[in-house]
Image 1 (cartoon, rainbow, N blue to C red):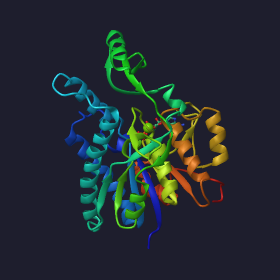
Image 2: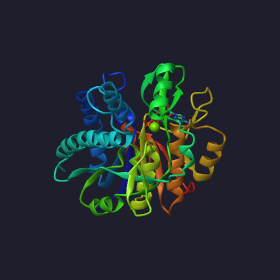
Image 3: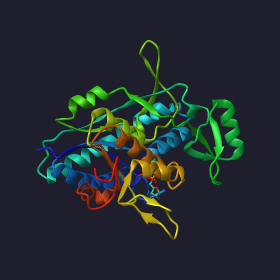
Length: 319
Ligand code: ADP
Ligand code: MG
């Protein structure tokens, strides 16, 4: 009776209350509310997997370890990424289980897979790191850190200096077979924070690298490789807009791949926020017949799946 298979990408607002102190308890509270919405999708007989972001969480782990460096050695970014997958996955497992009990589906197991994502060693992103992470420093501190650790440090929008890392394109998911085997029985939390970026050596071994993969691209790759019908990207806004935040803003109900590509070229979607979502949606819609992507808010997810709201990205209008 499965109505369809969905990969759900959860944005920052699904994991953290804006403005509240970022304690673990506070995160769990928000995740509980999020899981109530996700459980409604399960109640409507869809099969799902969850991908989530980790920006604030991994930032805090890095900051905590930097602050404690006199007593315990800092850990590399790939290890911090793995820690954030465990931390967020644990909350999602617990909250999702409770939400499933409330809809009489407490028997469905929920599990997190620590996920590695292979990136190309010569991805151009490594030459121009763009993604700021961790604490702010003064210019002087930043220069010392750059010299001592070889980090790339940049000034971040007048707020101070931060470490910046590359945001490469994910090529291959190391644990893809495991999620395929679990799909029919289990709700899997997968590729948290976009997955832990690794490079593959010639002998087939993997090595973690200091980079951050966009979770929207990671969710897209998962959706393509598992072969689901729908990529559902849940964020803060109910619909994608053109002329966003301008007097002539127009919210879009449906967006064909061609239109999306034109609007991307015209610069309607902000890099680092809406652009990766639209790009991921387009790539997925192009990847097979009857594949569609929906971008909407967490609160409107159920309605959007019924075609009542959200922005639908398809190959053609009639699809
Ligand atoms: P997430 O944590 O879900 O990835 P982001 O902040 O990265 O969220 O991206 C979603 C945000 O993108 C929206 O809250 C909105 O402010 C912004 N945005 C930028 N361009 C657009 C657009 N053209 N249409 C709608 N939202 C846009
Ligand atoms: Mg984002």
